[in-house]
Image (cartoon, rainbow, N blue to C red; front, side, top):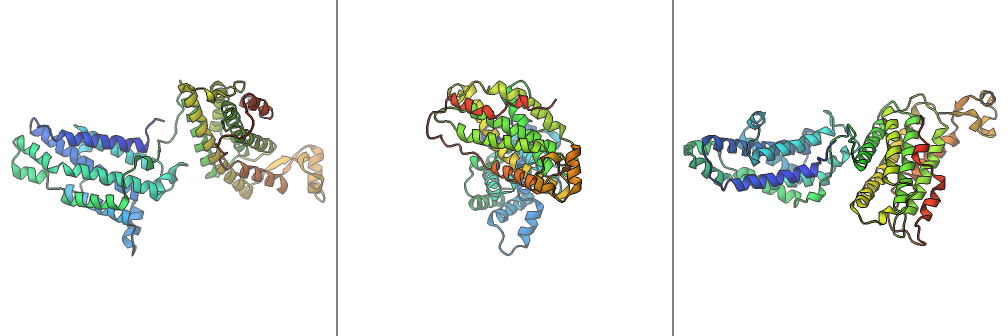
Length: 449
């Protein structure tokens, strides 16, 4: 996993396009450099067309074409894609993909294609999501923001046509050849203006910080490793929700992670202005959920990757925010700020995990049987059921009762919302907050061998 995100790639593309635009003010040395610049500039247009299709998808474009009142942004984007194809041709792959970039134009095309590939990573060939954050790319707000950037990039790229033609002609290329290489960008510029008007102004902050799919954990920096493991935890929780291999043991491991994250976050934020109180309450809810799940069994074994991350977090969380050192968020050093940001993201992430786990638990109840020790059933629940009475006497397992399943379902409901980050009103929490965590065990004490 890297720090590459969709927003960052588009910002880098814009910077490189501006650099390429300025390069047309410099006289070219020879015909080979002129041809390379023309090829690279056309590569940007080809990459813009591909990015439009990645944001629209062929299915949405087909629906737009058949609609009586098509979405104006999608219609304008499709018009720009068609204008680009008509201007630079429909041959694919573009020659720049075979020869590599030679200028800022070529590097900007390569960066934009990386952003296009990043979009594709989060969906499979059928358009179904492959990650828990794929839905961010499906929203109209993100689509409009991305297409607004495409329009701005297309306008800048088209605006240098005359200057580029002059520089190419100065290298000795015959003017008829120059006109053949650079036929004019009037149609592209007009379509780009239409898209810019329909999508609104380009706002870089409307684009998601959507990165690559987490495939490995980076070590060497405890906060980076902590973040990578938590991102992988979220991904595995989402995958389990959509998989037939759903495990109560994995849900128990995930609940244990929820306990630990909120316990250490609460101690880190302990102080007069920190959100420790709601974090403590949320940690106790996760702990109660973990205790309920500890007595349940399902046929599917636990996920070894999640359990490995649980073991890793048992090592990382005490190193980042020891339970015995309350109120480190009050420090003004950069490490404290980084740690606070990491815990803020972790708390948000665990609410998503809770959502996925609640759905997973409901699916397990629908498709298989959850077992508990028969001794945990009440007298009313085993009355008139001789088999359950015998299982209780023999110390065996029995199907969980509706009461037990309902208790777990309600606990999941209590951890699915984000704990309020507003400053705590009332007495100073200080080190007293750590004392109030007596009911929450450190994560290291809850990891099975």
